[in-house]
Length: 282
Length: 252
Image (cartoon, rainbow over all chains, first blue to last red; front, side, top):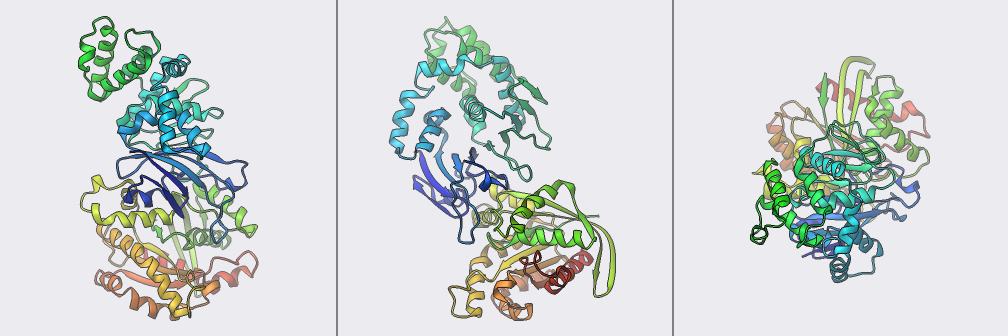
């Protein structure tokens, strides 16, 4: 069951399919831990945050400033957010669809489901082909490996935060996503989310990823993630891209093949190679 | 010597302004220096203060470090070499954490993320400053006593639970400072002597438990607003900021 919330930071939460214990957390969690102090003066300040809730679900929010103030005149951020459990991940994995939904405001949760099943790379082969075509398996494989191992990173991506987030959110295993906080905004001091995608380098000790230069400092390379992208990019009949993505996720989660894959000898070598590498993941 | 004294309180209690005021006072009196790591935070806040605009809300936790070399109070100079580590903590997150205490306090590993964060903040403290806003109900009350009691009503549960959390998971609080600061004196206009009798009645259960543990409890009534346009020294001394700092430094 997917939830939806409209929130004024620290003040008000309303929406549908929200668990009672999530209400208090939603007052703060969907917003940056340290927004820039001058956000009211920035033109169209907005960003994206993904974070776990104590209910076990995650919240994906689009936060923004529209001039809202509290009774003391303090400027306050607003957010529109989706709350989802891992069983709902397929419907929210394509961040492009999700952000269009959150920004448009007018649509219902049912419409999100319809839209996701029509256009998301998890359901549309054309969308999946477009999504993976541009991916550099070596670099993206290392980015995913680094996040998987360190659970923390600063990603310098000044012009394309949303694209970076779409790749990471689209490809990381669900059990990792469920425990990570990710944000596209940081004010230059104070707490930082586990993964920060912005134009600022924090002083903390963690892997540093320069997206444009394809450089990673303090990173890791796990073969399983490179192979994951390789398999997504090559043509592997009889699996259309979306079916293939589901199989890869199954292997990542279970570290085993589903029965139907065992029966298909033709493409098994590549998947078998992936399975062996997944088994090495700690 | 580094001492860790978090500042706790509900949201809109005045924690950020209080910290900025202390940092400004210590710097101006040349009693110490604000650590490089948190100076940008104060510089950004000053943009708002000098324009007479309200500070933006505090989101997560901003670590603050003040290096204090000396304090002057009552004509006496007390030399020290103290790094006062504290933090500007989101009041809303603090309230959320204290609401989560009941169902997960026994198993820290599975505690919700916000509660886990506050247990980390409140463990190993060398003292606590609790900020209480007694002015928030003035408009909707029949008189000042009524307003103060109503204000206590909305703050007693989170603040008391936060203090209990520190007592449970932190170092022993014997002789450690626990200072209650009643902010926004510019609005409520009450002195400590007027507030404390009401406070002692309403907070008796917590206070008795703290006395049993020999916690060093003190009270202050301050305002953080106004130092930019009044006589600087008389403002701070009049507010008792020098006494608060002196009491804090000698008890750490």
